[in-house]
Length: 515
Image 1 (cartoon, rainbow, N blue to C red):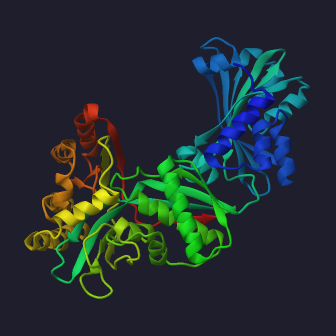
Image 2 (image 1 turned 60 degrees about the horizontal axis):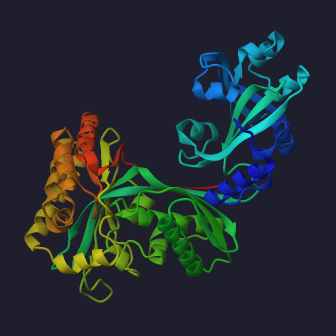
Image 3 (image 1 turned 90 degrees about the vertical axis):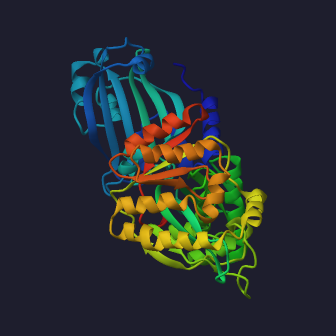
């Protein structure tokens, strides 16, 4: 394992900054130092550092550990996970994993290593062990569940990781990985937004004879979601995600800055986002998350409906904006149609800029014991842009009798099933909506694998299944049999490929956290 030269460490830092944005001087020092991290932390915080040992065990070296330590696979290794904490605030500063080959340790060193309260740097000094540190890697890793809990961050947030070896007598004595959040060790104010995606079950009235149009039903999802953080900057810059989502974030940021007259821009890092044009409302959540971040950064008060109007969302369906604001199961009442101040034709939200989000008629908690399966086949993006607008013009108005039946299914079966916790009633209403109104059009436009997925998940035990928005994501709702439904979905996907995710509803809206 070759150590990184100073030049290579600099290159790694540049690569990290290209992915997630500018690092602070202290972050760069913690990544690149070949000295004691404990000493650096104590100087930076002005407080002593304490150690909390989470894991201390003797394990057999796997192939990766053996290569890093230049020992044989199966050799005994002391495996230790510790948290380095600020002794005054109790805040976790560094999460560290170390591996030490026991056959290279003197008995006194081993005794101190097995104690729970001594940093490795202090052990080396206490035993006057001459050593040097060789940095072998520096990278970005996702927090995941364990690190998120340790540091109190979102599971999708980016973490800075560095790996190094302590060399004694020209042999690796200890291999260490140290991890800390991308948002740590910086004096800048940062705002993190965790915004949920959503299922769009159906539009209700794409006939318009009643003098109203649109209306929608949907469910807020716990994941996938949009997670981004922002800090002030002279201009707008975006890191993370793919090119299209970066463009969307930048466009939303510039629109909000102009619309609210903000004095500056923002440097935004996107940690996670639902797939674009998959039927999960990613565009709305990314735009609103960006808007909310800038408002918090510049201390501007703005309600979600105003932000939605600024970034051009909610002009047809109000499910995405209501999911951002409230979460849960949502029914919206659509827009006035054909009268002054209302919509004059049929069009999707993306083509309805300047139209206010519709009123929310019902918001209800979705049962926490009901599971939601999401299946997104790799069959290309769902309808969007001019193609989506063309479909609205071509297939609307839909037959009035189907609109009436659809509204009856929602009002007298879907919502009562939800309120009375009757999964079968709720699921059967979902199934019926796939054959009515504009949802029937959306389903008919899909690749044949979509209909196969809907049928297979219901046959495998889901109470109901359908297409979310214009797809291609299929959702299925159930409880105890959802693992069977997931297996059935994977079998149907076969060579098509795609993603299968078992998740839950989310009964709250976006979370905005300032640091």
